[in-house]
Image 1 (spheres, helix red, strand yellow):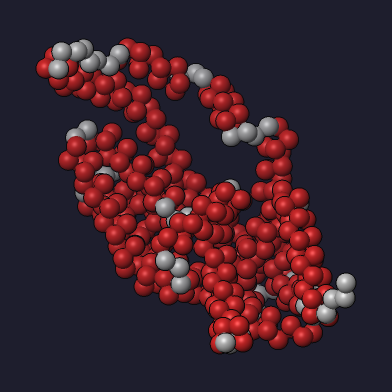
Image 2 (tube, rainbow, N blue to C red):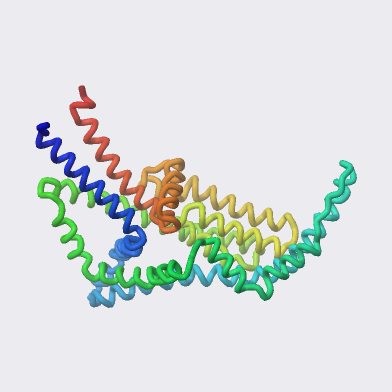
Length: 353
């Protein structure tokens, strides 16, 4: 069977794409730190160029940029860990009291319907004593087992955490050279369209990151100030964590809400205080969803809420937590590609005929 040159090229490129997909799936555990390192390098590249323009040596500019990122991640960890360690002992004391309060209200209700409703407070107290005192090793082992992390996987994870900044350092050090080498692999006939596509993608991602940064800063200020106004003692760490963690859509808000409501329940021990804190988070979500994100991010990405949720679920299923982190930036790239495909399709004879 004789195939036309166009068909032969299409089959050849389809075979290359199939092999590339197979290699990516097969080498996913190995490629993950390289992908994350490239994302980190892309994120920090404007800062490196700005520092280098101030006549700092490039190696020093790269080091300072990576240090800013590491310090930022450490700040997030140090904001949430003290909150949790402070709340766990209080939870051990307060949960049995809540159970006794429920017993007081449930037992009359059970009498009205002809049954006995009661919570075994002593069993809850013993369970908390076992879970939160003296069994930290058992809890850690069970968590590791539930997360399916064995010894080798844990070593691989730690290795990736250490390897990623090293890879990002060398990528940033030779960023322009890396891009030129990657562009050299593009066929000559496609070089100009690929360059234009990369420029459009870079513009969209730049708008996304700037907008997301403004959203994070605005929400950090909102949650810290609003929680302080309602009298929450841990307003500053919880507010800052919630605002900065919204770079993971829905996850940051959910974790911040749980921390805030738990802290309110332990501090106020009344439904009114918990309702005030929950109201702050509901208001923050409304501000983010109806004003901040559409104003600063929505126009840059061009995704509706349904597409955002689908992207988060799909990337999270394929790549786990890293997939959730990169879902929206990668979706922005896909939007640029789909726009170009739509433009090419509407100009084709297939569409116009």
